[in-house]
Amino acid sequence: MNQDIHPILLELQRNSQQLYGFELHSWTPVSLGWLNLKWRLITDRGEFLLKIYHAKRYKDVHVLTRALEQQQRLHDFGVPCPELLTRDGEVLHGLDDEKFIIMQFYPGNRVKPQDINKLQMYELGLITGKMHRILNDTALGDDITPQFVPPSREERISHWHHVMEEATNNDMTHLQSRIELQLKLTETLDIDFLDTTLTGWSHRDLWVDNLLFYENKVSAVLDFDRLNFDYPELDVARAIMSWALYNGDLRTDFVSAFLDGYRMEHNYHSGRLVNSLRMLWYMESEWWITADMDDHNVVQSRFAEEMIWLSQNDEQLPVVVGNL
Image (tube, rainbow, N blue to C red; front, side, top):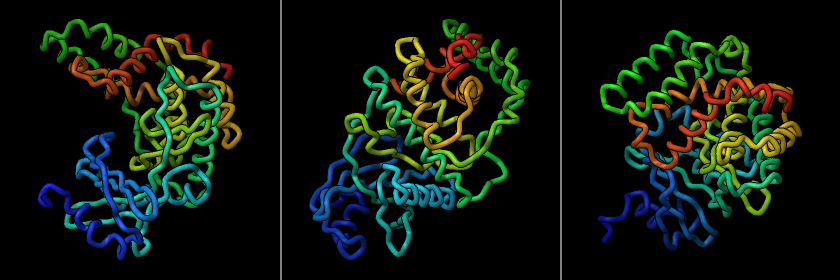
């Protein structure tokens, strides 16, 4: 029987009281997430989440540890995110060659774009702004290079030509119009603004699966594994596209609600969203618009839909969100 139980669960079953101060009663697997393994733990101290990292999901233990320490700091400053259980002051634990964390299990619901309301969008903006304010309070300092280094126009044009050729060679000619959209915008978009975008510490994964809501409040921000030095306004753009775009319409009243909340905690100049959305497109379009996008799952298809919308509506962005 025990041979089917993960070794880390067996270790917790034997020594959780000594190691982490709780008695483990039972556990159930959690299916959300990519590659990482997760279990909901039932203990005498309440419910926790065990997350075991797949080696492909982190490249640098130092970077992952720093991200988790910031999650802990954000929790201590009142941002709704799970508290991590520590052992000897460490937030990231190991057994053999595997790394894992144990954190509070937070109740709440994932809210899809069609179900979110404007109060929730305001709260999402408020929490995002608070998170950015705390992360960039100088405690972390500044890294020299952000995670996203925008490729040159020539590099990106070459990329789209390659994708077009790949689609043609694989008889995916029905995808050519979508790829052509990306190529044409790359050729014409003024990308000089990319050189002046403000850098800073960011969550870097603010989308539907990583936020829980309880009624109209954000009950938990999740998955800080990608937190790093980058561009905070990419978080703004990612959240807005994830929740405000629905049925082919970027709902400006929902965008305004988010920005109203955000500006209660952090600066964001009126009109800035145009370039934030363009930067998001410049970064993410190559991830989701591919020669094999017919094989995308539901999540990937949603991201691709957002990139297509941005490329189709780029000229209208100053009209649609330029005054927000």
